[in-house]
Length: 257
Image (cartoon, rainbow, N blue to C red; front, side, top):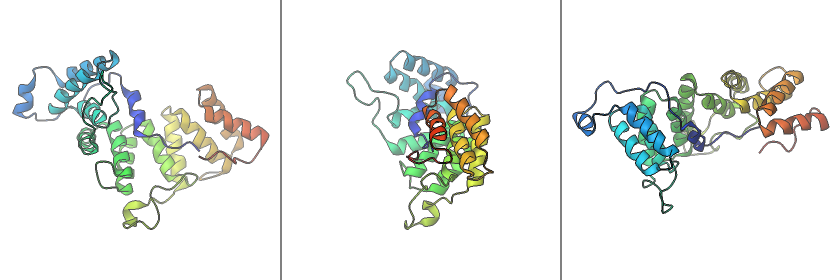
């Protein structure tokens, strides 16, 4: 089964976005920083990233974040998460800070930013910048999925899939915060929604669920069709599944990581 992707996948989002969320009320200090709209600061920052100048890009994201931009806070969080590259000396653009990254992700998430909700989920899951709490992590994952993130839909499926390692460790001091029960039927629902949202790797996981009858009725033909689609989209794990189905029908040994 495909493992869930880390927050580093957020780097694939470095492209101009649609209309940005703006805070209803900007502070007088934020208004005094610049007469440029937060949206323009974000777009300039993205252009600077593409031109290979992450340090100046962070300056633009900072201005946007201070003016209440959800996108500005999201990209500033990536900088504090050490995910936007390094300067000419090979050093981080800003001093890495899990706590600052968490705060910026939270502001962006509160502003409706789906991918920030996704990254906030990872902060809670791994205890980076905030106390570890897998229930809170899954809650943010669900919110991100509801806001339209295909990555979140996929990862929610992974979290609930019994064919994946559990979130948390049994015997932790706060088990109600450390464990997330597996729910195979819900996992399949999330995989289906992720597939509908265009997530190619979700096709592999949904195919495995169908192939093994985990959380749904077994359907080898449907599984093979999904794997073929994923393989055509360049997902190498799909090729493995197809080969395994041909050489060892009914089994998926040596696949799970």
